[in-house]
Length: 355
Ligand code: KDG
Image 1 (cartoon, rainbow, N blue to C red):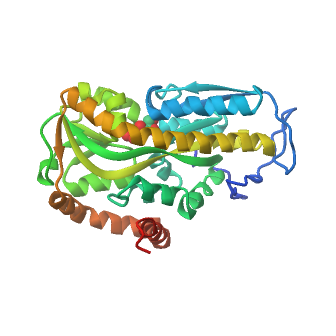
Image 2 (image 1 turned 45 degrees about the vertical axis):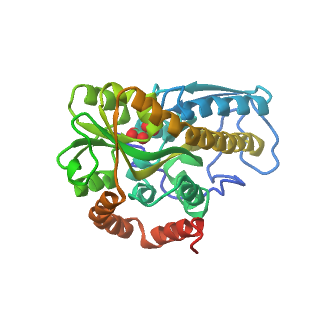
Protein backbone atom coordinates (compact mmCIF):
# COMPACT_ATOMS: atom_id res chain seq x y z
CA UNK A 1 0.00 0.00 0.00
CA UNK A 2 1.31 3.42 -0.98
CA UNK A 3 2.45 5.10 2.17
CA UNK A 4 3.45 8.70 2.43
CA UNK A 5 6.83 8.14 4.02
CA UNK A 6 7.87 5.72 1.22
CA UNK A 7 7.28 8.42 -1.35
CA UNK A 8 8.96 11.03 0.77
CA UNK A 9 10.74 13.71 -1.16
CA UNK A 10 14.38 12.70 -1.45
CA UNK A 11 17.18 15.20 -1.65
CA UNK A 12 16.73 18.69 -0.30
CA UNK A 13 14.79 18.64 2.93
CA UNK A 14 14.95 22.13 4.22
CA UNK A 15 13.86 22.58 7.82
CA UNK A 16 11.39 25.39 8.44
CA UNK A 17 11.94 27.80 11.29
CA UNK A 18 8.28 27.44 12.04
CA UNK A 19 7.70 30.54 14.10
CA UNK A 20 9.37 32.85 11.56
CA UNK A 21 8.28 30.56 8.68
CA UNK A 22 10.56 31.86 6.00
CA UNK A 23 10.34 29.26 3.29
CA UNK A 24 10.23 25.52 3.24
CA UNK A 25 12.69 25.08 0.44
CA UNK A 26 10.10 23.80 -1.96
CA UNK A 27 9.53 25.23 -5.40
CA UNK A 28 6.28 27.31 -5.35
CA UNK A 29 3.51 25.65 -7.23
CA UNK A 30 3.07 26.82 -10.82
CA UNK A 31 -0.57 27.68 -10.10
CA UNK A 32 -1.48 31.09 -11.67
CA UNK A 33 -1.92 32.89 -8.38
CA UNK A 34 0.78 30.92 -6.60
CA UNK A 35 3.06 33.01 -4.44
CA UNK A 36 6.52 31.89 -3.53
CA UNK A 37 7.22 32.11 0.16
CA UNK A 38 9.52 35.02 -0.38
CA UNK A 39 9.94 37.66 2.27
CA UNK A 40 7.76 40.70 1.89
CA UNK A 41 5.12 39.28 -0.37
CA UNK A 42 1.88 40.68 0.97
CA UNK A 43 -0.64 38.95 -1.26
CA UNK A 44 -3.64 37.16 0.19
CA UNK A 45 -5.31 35.00 -2.44
CA UNK A 46 -8.81 33.54 -2.35
CA UNK A 47 -8.33 29.97 -1.12
CA UNK A 48 -10.57 27.08 -0.13
CA UNK A 49 -9.07 25.19 2.82
CA UNK A 50 -10.09 21.81 4.29
CA UNK A 51 -9.19 21.00 7.91
CA UNK A 52 -9.56 17.42 9.23
CA UNK A 53 -10.36 16.98 12.93
CA UNK A 54 -10.28 13.42 14.30
CA UNK A 55 -12.77 13.75 17.12
CA UNK A 56 -16.37 14.89 17.30
CA UNK A 57 -17.38 18.55 16.91
CA UNK A 58 -18.25 18.85 20.62
CA UNK A 59 -14.79 17.70 21.78
CA UNK A 60 -12.28 20.53 22.56
CA UNK A 61 -10.37 19.48 19.42
CA UNK A 62 -13.49 20.07 17.35
CA UNK A 63 -14.32 23.36 19.07
CA UNK A 64 -10.75 24.54 18.48
CA UNK A 65 -11.06 23.54 14.83
CA UNK A 66 -14.00 25.95 14.56
CA UNK A 67 -11.96 28.60 16.38
CA UNK A 68 -9.17 28.15 13.80
CA UNK A 69 -11.71 28.63 11.00
CA UNK A 70 -13.09 31.80 12.62
CA UNK A 71 -9.63 33.34 13.11
CA UNK A 72 -8.36 32.48 9.62
CA UNK A 73 -11.48 33.72 7.82
CA UNK A 74 -11.47 36.95 9.82
CA UNK A 75 -7.74 37.68 9.43
CA UNK A 76 -7.76 36.93 5.70
CA UNK A 77 -10.65 39.33 5.18
CA UNK A 78 -12.82 36.43 4.14
CA UNK A 79 -10.47 35.42 1.30
CA UNK A 80 -9.73 32.09 3.01
CA UNK A 81 -12.77 29.82 3.29
CA UNK A 82 -12.20 26.98 5.79
CA UNK A 83 -14.29 23.79 5.80
CA UNK A 84 -13.83 21.75 9.00
CA UNK A 85 -14.45 17.99 8.80
CA UNK A 86 -15.02 16.30 12.20
CA UNK A 87 -15.01 12.75 13.52
CA UNK A 88 -12.52 11.29 11.03
CA UNK A 89 -14.83 12.08 8.06
CA UNK A 90 -11.71 12.38 5.88
CA UNK A 91 -10.15 9.19 7.28
CA UNK A 92 -8.13 8.04 10.27
CA UNK A 93 -4.88 9.69 11.38
CA UNK A 94 -2.73 7.76 8.96
CA UNK A 95 -5.07 8.49 6.03
CA UNK A 96 -5.03 12.19 6.96
CA UNK A 97 -1.22 12.17 6.96
CA UNK A 98 -1.21 10.49 3.53
CA UNK A 99 -3.69 13.07 2.17
CA UNK A 100 -1.59 15.95 3.46
CA UNK A 101 1.55 14.53 1.87
CA UNK A 102 -0.17 14.03 -1.48
CA UNK A 103 -1.69 17.52 -1.35
CA UNK A 104 -5.36 16.45 -1.50
CA UNK A 105 -5.93 17.93 1.98
CA UNK A 106 -4.60 21.28 3.25
CA UNK A 107 -4.57 20.82 7.07
CA UNK A 108 -5.28 18.16 9.69
CA UNK A 109 -4.95 17.55 13.42
CA UNK A 110 -3.85 14.05 14.47
CA UNK A 111 -2.09 12.40 17.38
CA UNK A 112 1.70 12.34 17.16
CA UNK A 113 1.83 8.56 17.74
CA UNK A 114 1.02 7.45 14.16
CA UNK A 115 3.77 9.77 12.84
CA UNK A 116 6.46 7.47 14.29
CA UNK A 117 6.04 5.25 11.22
CA UNK A 118 7.87 7.94 9.28
CA UNK A 119 9.62 10.16 11.85
CA UNK A 120 10.49 7.65 14.58
CA UNK A 121 11.68 10.41 16.97
CA UNK A 122 8.04 11.40 17.64
CA UNK A 123 8.12 8.21 19.73
CA UNK A 124 9.62 10.22 22.61
CA UNK A 125 6.06 11.35 23.29
CA UNK A 126 4.96 7.71 23.59
CA UNK A 127 7.39 6.85 26.42
CA UNK A 128 5.26 5.91 29.44
CA UNK A 129 5.08 7.95 32.66
CA UNK A 130 7.45 10.59 31.26
CA UNK A 131 5.20 13.59 31.93
CA UNK A 132 3.56 14.21 35.31
CA UNK A 133 1.72 17.41 34.35
CA UNK A 134 0.43 19.26 31.31
CA UNK A 135 2.87 22.08 32.17
CA UNK A 136 5.77 19.70 31.63
CA UNK A 137 4.30 18.59 28.32
CA UNK A 138 3.87 22.23 27.20
CA UNK A 139 7.52 22.95 28.08
CA UNK A 140 8.75 20.08 25.88
CA UNK A 141 6.30 20.53 23.00
CA UNK A 142 6.76 24.31 22.75
CA UNK A 143 10.52 24.13 23.35
CA UNK A 144 13.54 22.94 21.32
CA UNK A 145 12.55 19.25 21.38
CA UNK A 146 9.08 19.90 19.98
CA UNK A 147 10.43 22.22 17.29
CA UNK A 148 13.25 19.85 16.30
CA UNK A 149 10.65 17.17 15.57
CA UNK A 150 8.45 19.54 13.55
CA UNK A 151 11.53 20.36 11.45
CA UNK A 152 11.76 16.70 10.37
CA UNK A 153 8.36 16.75 8.68
CA UNK A 154 8.98 18.82 5.48
CA UNK A 155 11.17 15.96 4.20
CA UNK A 156 7.94 13.94 4.20
CA UNK A 157 5.94 16.61 2.33
CA UNK A 158 4.21 17.76 5.53
CA UNK A 159 4.68 20.88 7.65
CA UNK A 160 4.12 20.79 11.42
CA UNK A 161 2.60 24.06 12.65
CA UNK A 162 2.08 23.45 16.35
CA UNK A 163 0.85 21.15 19.10
CA UNK A 164 -2.57 20.93 20.68
CA UNK A 165 -3.52 18.54 23.49
CA UNK A 166 -5.09 15.10 23.42
CA UNK A 167 -4.02 14.42 27.00
CA UNK A 168 -3.17 11.85 29.64
CA UNK A 169 -4.40 8.40 28.73
CA UNK A 170 -6.48 6.15 31.02
CA UNK A 171 -7.54 2.53 30.64
CA UNK A 172 -11.12 1.35 30.10
CA UNK A 173 -12.33 -2.23 29.73
CA UNK A 174 -15.47 -4.32 29.73
CA UNK A 175 -14.28 -7.25 31.88
CA UNK A 176 -13.17 -6.18 35.37
CA UNK A 177 -11.94 -3.39 37.61
CA UNK A 178 -8.22 -2.74 37.02
CA UNK A 179 -6.44 -1.26 40.04
CA UNK A 180 -3.21 -3.25 40.11
CA UNK A 181 -0.48 -4.40 37.72
CA UNK A 182 -1.84 -7.92 38.09
CA UNK A 183 -5.30 -6.82 36.95
CA UNK A 184 -3.92 -5.88 33.49
CA UNK A 185 -2.82 -9.46 32.80
CA UNK A 186 -4.31 -10.95 29.64
CA UNK A 187 -6.65 -8.04 28.85
CA UNK A 188 -7.05 -7.55 25.07
CA UNK A 189 -6.26 -3.84 24.79
CA UNK A 190 -6.45 -1.80 21.61
CA UNK A 191 -3.49 0.50 21.16
CA UNK A 192 -2.71 3.26 18.65
CA UNK A 193 -0.70 1.66 15.80
CA UNK A 194 2.67 2.53 17.35
CA UNK A 195 5.42 0.14 18.42
CA UNK A 196 6.12 1.89 21.73
CA UNK A 197 2.48 1.62 22.81
CA UNK A 198 2.50 -2.06 21.82
CA UNK A 199 5.68 -2.80 23.82
CA UNK A 200 4.39 -0.91 26.85
CA UNK A 201 1.23 -3.04 27.08
CA UNK A 202 3.14 -6.26 26.36
CA UNK A 203 5.52 -5.40 29.22
CA UNK A 204 2.54 -4.77 31.49
CA UNK A 205 1.24 -8.26 30.67
CA UNK A 206 -1.78 -7.23 28.61
CA UNK A 207 -2.54 -8.54 25.13
CA UNK A 208 -2.30 -5.43 22.89
CA UNK A 209 -3.83 -5.06 19.41
CA UNK A 210 -2.94 -2.04 17.22
CA UNK A 211 -6.03 -0.57 15.55
CA UNK A 212 -7.05 2.73 13.92
CA UNK A 213 -9.27 4.90 16.11
CA UNK A 214 -12.05 4.64 13.51
CA UNK A 215 -12.45 0.88 14.19
CA UNK A 216 -12.28 1.10 17.97
CA UNK A 217 -15.91 1.52 19.03
CA UNK A 218 -17.13 -1.41 16.91
CA UNK A 219 -14.31 -3.63 18.20
CA UNK A 220 -15.31 -2.92 21.79
CA UNK A 221 -19.02 -3.32 21.00
CA UNK A 222 -18.41 -6.73 19.40
CA UNK A 223 -16.05 -7.68 22.25
CA UNK A 224 -13.25 -8.30 19.75
CA UNK A 225 -11.17 -6.41 22.28
CA UNK A 226 -11.69 -5.99 26.02
CA UNK A 227 -10.50 -2.42 26.38
CA UNK A 228 -8.64 0.62 25.19
CA UNK A 229 -6.85 3.65 26.62
CA UNK A 230 -7.55 7.31 25.91
CA UNK A 231 -7.94 10.64 27.68
CA UNK A 232 -11.15 11.20 29.66
CA UNK A 233 -12.57 13.69 27.16
CA UNK A 234 -12.12 11.18 24.32
CA UNK A 235 -13.74 8.38 26.34
CA UNK A 236 -16.71 10.61 27.09
CA UNK A 237 -17.17 12.40 23.74
CA UNK A 238 -17.00 9.11 21.82
CA UNK A 239 -19.49 7.48 24.24
CA UNK A 240 -17.15 4.62 25.16
CA UNK A 241 -19.18 4.28 28.38
CA UNK A 242 -21.84 2.57 26.24
CA UNK A 243 -19.52 -0.41 25.67
CA UNK A 244 -17.03 -0.18 28.58
CA UNK A 245 -17.95 -0.63 32.24
CA UNK A 246 -14.63 -0.04 33.95
CA UNK A 247 -12.36 3.01 33.98
CA UNK A 248 -8.89 3.05 35.59
CA UNK A 249 -7.16 6.38 36.19
CA UNK A 250 -3.74 5.21 35.03
CA UNK A 251 -2.38 8.36 33.31
CA UNK A 252 0.27 6.06 31.84
CA UNK A 253 0.96 8.17 28.73
CA UNK A 254 0.53 11.77 27.52
CA UNK A 255 -0.44 12.13 23.84
CA UNK A 256 -0.10 15.46 22.00
CA UNK A 257 -2.22 16.47 19.05
CA UNK A 258 -0.21 17.96 16.18
CA UNK A 259 -1.50 20.48 13.64
CA UNK A 260 -0.16 19.46 10.23
CA UNK A 261 -0.26 21.09 6.81
CA UNK A 262 0.34 19.91 3.27
CA UNK A 263 3.79 21.14 2.19
CA UNK A 264 2.51 21.29 -1.39
CA UNK A 265 -0.14 23.79 -0.29
CA UNK A 266 2.14 25.59 2.18
CA UNK A 267 4.76 26.27 -0.50
CA UNK A 268 2.16 28.18 -2.51
CA UNK A 269 1.42 30.63 0.28
CA UNK A 270 2.86 34.13 0.63
CA UNK A 271 4.55 35.08 3.90
CA UNK A 272 1.46 36.99 4.97
CA UNK A 273 -0.82 34.02 4.21
CA UNK A 274 1.47 31.72 6.18
CA UNK A 275 1.47 34.12 9.13
CA UNK A 276 -2.35 34.13 9.16
CA UNK A 277 -2.38 30.32 9.33
CA UNK A 278 0.51 30.00 11.80
CA UNK A 279 -0.93 32.62 14.18
CA UNK A 280 -4.35 30.92 14.05
CA UNK A 281 -2.80 27.52 14.87
CA UNK A 282 -1.06 28.98 17.92
CA UNK A 283 -4.09 31.00 19.13
CA UNK A 284 -6.56 28.12 18.67
CA UNK A 285 -4.01 25.76 20.22
CA UNK A 286 -3.75 27.85 23.40
CA UNK A 287 -7.57 27.94 23.46
CA UNK A 288 -7.81 24.14 23.01
CA UNK A 289 -5.31 23.37 25.76
CA UNK A 290 -7.16 25.58 28.23
CA UNK A 291 -10.55 24.18 27.23
CA UNK A 292 -9.57 20.50 27.39
CA UNK A 293 -7.90 20.92 30.80
CA UNK A 294 -11.08 22.44 32.16
CA UNK A 295 -13.11 19.53 30.76
CA UNK A 296 -11.28 16.62 32.43
CA UNK A 297 -13.07 16.86 35.79
CA UNK A 298 -16.44 17.27 34.04
CA UNK A 299 -15.74 14.25 31.82
CA UNK A 300 -14.85 12.10 34.83
CA UNK A 301 -18.04 13.12 36.65
CA UNK A 302 -20.11 12.40 33.53
CA UNK A 303 -18.49 8.98 33.05
CA UNK A 304 -19.37 8.08 36.65
CA UNK A 305 -22.91 9.36 36.07
CA UNK A 306 -23.09 7.11 32.99
CA UNK A 307 -22.38 4.14 35.25
CA UNK A 308 -18.65 3.53 34.69
CA UNK A 309 -16.95 2.01 37.76
CA UNK A 310 -13.81 4.04 38.38
CA UNK A 311 -10.62 2.57 39.91
CA UNK A 312 -7.73 4.68 41.12
CA UNK A 313 -4.30 3.07 40.72
CA UNK A 314 -2.28 3.57 43.91
CA UNK A 315 1.23 5.02 43.94
CA UNK A 316 2.61 1.63 44.93
CA UNK A 317 0.90 -0.11 42.00
CA UNK A 318 1.92 2.71 39.62
CA UNK A 319 5.51 2.16 40.77
CA UNK A 320 5.20 -1.56 39.93
CA UNK A 321 3.90 -0.67 36.45
CA UNK A 322 6.72 1.86 36.00
CA UNK A 323 9.24 -0.83 36.94
CA UNK A 324 7.95 -3.31 34.34
CA UNK A 325 7.89 -0.70 31.55
CA UNK A 326 11.36 0.70 32.35
CA UNK A 327 13.06 -1.72 29.88
CA UNK A 328 10.75 -0.31 27.17
CA UNK A 329 11.93 3.22 27.97
CA UNK A 330 15.57 2.03 27.90
CA UNK A 331 15.05 0.23 24.57
CA UNK A 332 13.44 3.21 22.85
CA UNK A 333 15.77 5.76 24.39
CA UNK A 334 18.50 4.02 22.41
CA UNK A 335 16.56 3.70 19.14
CA UNK A 336 15.02 7.19 19.29
CA UNK A 337 18.33 8.85 20.20
CA UNK A 338 19.74 9.10 23.70
CA UNK A 339 20.65 12.77 23.24
CA UNK A 340 17.07 13.64 22.24
CA UNK A 341 15.58 11.70 25.17
CA UNK A 342 18.08 13.32 27.57
CA UNK A 343 17.21 16.77 26.17
CA UNK A 344 13.53 16.05 26.77
CA UNK A 345 14.13 14.77 30.32
CA UNK A 346 16.25 17.87 31.07
CA UNK A 347 13.42 20.13 29.84
CA UNK A 348 11.00 18.24 32.05
CA UNK A 349 13.29 18.61 35.08
CA UNK A 350 13.55 22.35 34.31
CA UNK A 351 9.76 22.61 34.14
CA UNK A 352 9.63 20.88 37.54
CA UNK A 353 12.06 23.50 38.85
CA UNK A 354 14.65 20.85 39.47
CA UNK A 355 17.31 22.14 37.05
O1 KDG B 1 -8.52 10.59 14.99
C1 KDG B 1 -8.66 10.63 16.39
C2 KDG B 1 -7.27 10.46 16.92
O2 KDG B 1 -6.46 11.52 16.48
C3 KDG B 1 -7.12 10.47 18.42
O3 KDG B 1 -8.26 10.16 19.10
C4 KDG B 1 -5.93 9.62 18.70
O4 KDG B 1 -5.97 9.11 20.97
C5 KDG B 1 -6.08 8.70 19.84
C6 KDG B 1 -6.34 7.28 19.54
O5 KDG B 1 -6.55 6.54 20.50
O6 KDG B 1 -6.25 6.91 18.34
